[in-house]
Image (tube, rainbow, N blue to C red; front, side):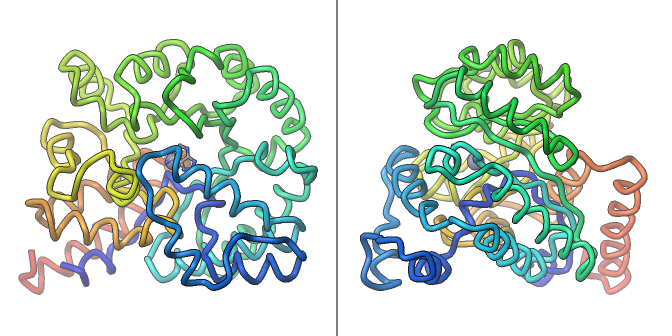
Length: 340
Ligand SMILES: Nc1ncnc2[nH]cnc12
Ligand SMILES: [Zn+2]
């Protein structure tokens, strides 16, 4: 099965680029930029990654991002993730970035976005990997601050496909950001939001009905409302589920408790994603492997999850067709060999 997971060309729709900062690069950038970090060794950093909930992770994640200063740093960060895409056979990726965690520290918006864009352009040229960028607003900050960031982003509109909402969920409901999402919609941005990661289903209803989002990031709490489950099924609203993240942040006790198989069997449009892979012990393939090892997932389930992510991406219909065809080719090869 591991080989099969590796062979399938995949898309990733839920990846925070700051969450792909590996301890080794964190150390290197801290040195390069003369930034103090509270760790003496790479092992110290790894030991600190022992989370009890979302907030305990976010505190460490924002502290880690402090080593990112120059355009080259953002390039290196993004390039390292692209190398993981190559390893994991990810042919299309839609990455989140959190401009406010950098502009708040005095780093210019353009430094961040241009470093990321340059690496993504090189990824297309060198490996044929396609990508898109989604800018997330930090929900623990105010809507006024989000509006300011939005205005700043307009100069780089051509590089940004959509807007999202992340950071501390509980206590910061989607309704807090109605105005900025309305403005983003008017400007033609795609809309997504983290909802139902830790907080209850009212956050998912708000994200759908007040923010008009097209994809739900996480959404695993949906299972608590049969009414919502029916709606998600009927409207085929994509849920970008992140299994390793959910385990590391104690949303579920262990992989066998994870509800992705139930969501899938119910007919929801769920995909598998890595969220913050440098912090959550593994990239995309490892998420699939962990599910397969602990849940009753067959090859048909894996195929469905992979097709869902390609179909739920923001690429053109033509490119979608081309990518789905690549998946079909692998499946047909496996069938010829009697592997499926
Ligand atoms: N899993 C997550 N939830 C909310 N905000 C995040 N920022 C980075 N990872 C996140
Ligand atoms: Zn996330």
